[in-house]
Image (cartoon, rainbow, N blue to C red):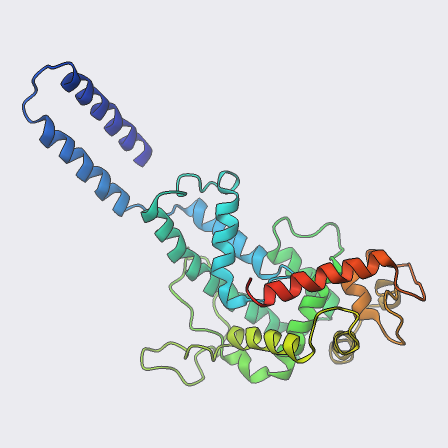
Length: 318
């Protein structure tokens, strides 16, 4: 409808310009132009994203939050915008790019959607480690990829680097379980169909305005934790023993707490780095489930370095 209005407006303006340029007098041409400019400004000011735009932004947000290198969860809205503007034609945002008012609307909506998706993911994490609803790491990883990733996952397999990310998040959630009632205060629902926030998200101390104090919600603490772990362990290479042990320990603890798959041996079988227990590190970097070597191959080491650098860059928000 708006497109038809703008098209009609442009046709009238072109006609007016043509008549004026031909030297034909027309009383009130200036007023008519001003009227159409005002109409255009008002229409632009009242422009809102459509339901398709909202659904697409939500899918982008869900896909971004589970990406292995996405460890700046409080900056999820920025990742949404970056992805949307990187492929405007594919996502249907070409009518927004380059129009400040519309870009401002998208930015505002992206913040609301990011908040809602974070709260939904927080609830999923919480449910996955609670006694009455817990899942094995592998089952949880599959369900999250099916729910959040664009296109789900191929067959019943999940890329191992996703499993590592989910394992680290479950470790943090389990070791800081009190924070699971401190999910950020949800913003106004973006499309009326967003998942409701985790129960109990308003139980902790709040500010006078009813919002969770900045920096005290679950995802703020997760961001701090990732940053601290990287700095504490001086993560510059996956060959570093402290990081290898930490990730490996994370997998072992998760399997002890919530169970392990029947095919655990085959799922993690690989030893990119010589170790008496290196399933988690292998899960992060190995592209084969059945290859086992006594020494790290040059390809594996290179892959490890690439993944590590990407991880560090993401964690630092660069």
